[in-house]
Length: 141
Image 1: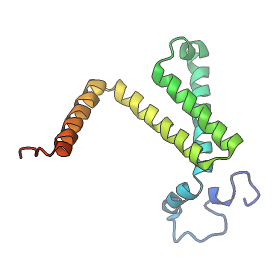
Image 2 (image 1 turned 180 degrees about the vertical axis):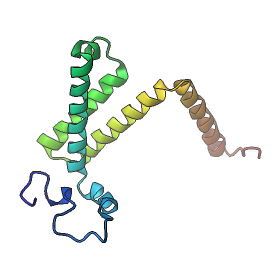
Image 3 (image 1 turned 90 degrees about the horizontal axis):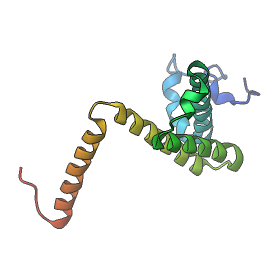
Image 4 (image 1 turned 45 degrees about the horizontal axis):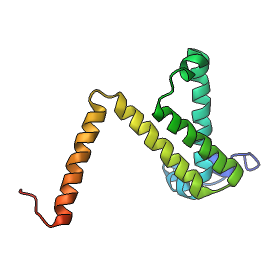
């Protein structure tokens, strides 16, 4: 597998001893070392998942009413792929992947009942606590 496109890190049988089946746990540090490769493969997986959804539901249903969150996600997906494939920039690729995660989390929270209002409420509580802390007023306990 050393000559594959994914490299030797993608195969658990690449000639390295993994200590008795703990190879999956040892991949976690490689996310930091091979962040661009991970983000590229993850983004390509997202593209194929979107294409699969378009085939099953029909492309017109996915395109007719795009939400701002979907537009942010698609732009971050395209930006991640561009940064990884064309620019070869690990920093921009990681930034695009972080934006993808934020867009997905925001979309999932918006789907939950009371999700958007709950996030605004918790954000307001956090902001007021930070303002009290910064202004020197202590919070009653």
